[in-house]
Image (tube, rainbow, N blue to C red; front, side, top):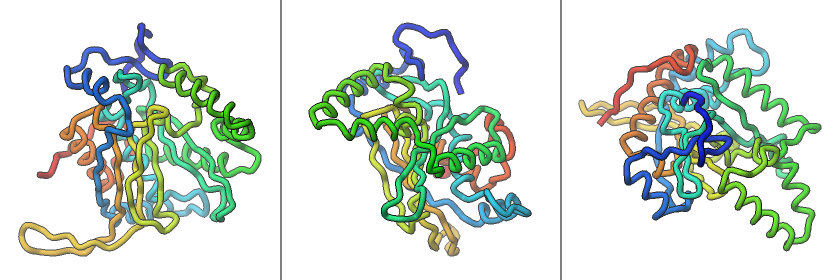
Amino acid sequence: MPETKKKKWGDRPDAVWLKDLPSMNRIMPCIMPNRADNEAYISVDIDYKPLETYLAKKNEGLTEDKYTFFHVIACAIGKAFVLRPKMNRFVCNKRVYQRNDITVAFTVKKKFDDRAEEALALFKIGEKETMDSFHEKIMKVIHVTKSDTEKDTSTGAMDILSKLPQWTINLVTGFVLWLDKRGWAPQSLIGSDPNHAAIFLSNLGSIGLEVGYHHLVNWGTNSCFIVLGKKHMKMFHYADGTEELKEVIPLGITLDERIADGYYYSGTVALVKKLLENPELLDMPADTPVEYSIKR
């Protein structure tokens, strides 16, 4: 995570403008300014066995607020963002920015019912975050968002706006988009918006769906959207001719290709896989270095 620096001209409240970049990184946002036109897709299968063993230990003696594989995967991705700071960048208004904080977001279904509302959950990840502190944060935000008496500010603002005439909605949203592009949108409006998070997660497996890829949006600053699919069995074929059937959790990752190159993304995926193959590494502070290698 970058050190806090004195704000300079061109910086935003949530990020620092990166001016000293290679020419390609400076020019690409000018040629291809829309985030949704710069999506790169990566698929990853996570071996469930190490997670199953780890979760059994973490949940020993717990009767509620148990650790889940979603919590562990989210924590691993957060740690990867701490150790791989280019992942915490975004492009807005044809400029590349480095975020001040690492934030993770996801939607919470208040009840498993067609008529039940969805709520938005978002919180910060610290450099010293561990699996236990991460779990405490994620459970706290889940309890709050599932409460019938609480509503996040972004959803509340949309509820009010949606009751206005269409021409008013068009006018207000157009103005807010203009503000957001320049980093001037009020924090009261975007503070709980997952489209302004560094990491946006969606656990489709929890509702019985296969993995897929989610698009990025031009609103906000999110450059990384990760979908978790439902567990399934997969056959692995090895160079020595042997085969092995494993239970895996598939991930579908959508990234903004302008914030880093393919090799950097490959290294980040290798790190996440190393953490999930050895989840006890998540019990150490997030900024603890981890040795890993890219398998070719």
